[in-house]
Image (tube, rainbow, N blue to C red; front, side):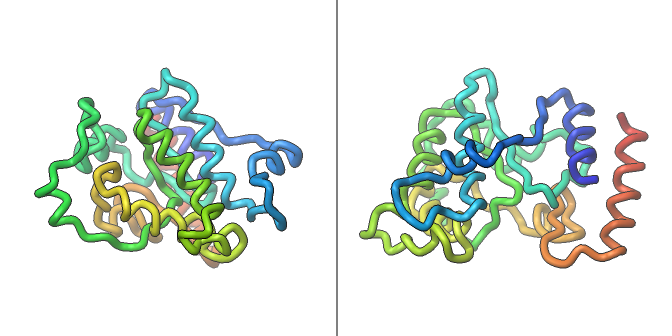
Amino acid sequence: ITYHLNRLYASLHGYRFHRPRVNDEQLREMLSDGLYPPRRVQWAIVRLVQQELEDRTCEYVVWMDSDAYVASSEPLETVLEEYGLLNKTGQPLRKDDLSRRSFVNISDHFMVVRNTPAARQLMAKWFQLPLNPTHGLERFRQELFLEQTVMNEFFKRVPDLIAPVPPLHHFEGYAASFARHSGGIKDQALELSLRDALIGRVRLV
């Protein structure tokens, strides 16, 4: 159901949308970094976003987990503008803005990446970071919370490249106002809420 909710949201606003299709051999290649045991499958998120960033006709890449969906009908541009991702100049944030920044641990179940050289480099460094023993993150190739832990450790080191973290109630949990993530136990109440959301989305398209 979340797939169709997101597909219809993209159709409503004229965005490209597709679900990644990766066979076992391609997945092994994505996760390969010369070490054993191989990385856990969640690390493929970073690789898949990197692949999409290779398409220079795409200004933004939005990743959503398979159990996440856009609950709002407002265009993505509204969110991008509110959180500074419509900055076309590519200039970093001002230092006085950075000094007021606070960092909290975030999830990558909903992630927006602006397609710039700096962003492409950032994604590559994110994947490579556990291979550098000086950072002490090697175990998160295999241990929870995997790419999310490395992301949170890495992103706070490059605040000039990262948009401010939005209020979590906009993007986290069952009742978030823009993107909802139904992590954990999936019960009948969730199934019914997804059904109702899909009916409402179909009426809009």
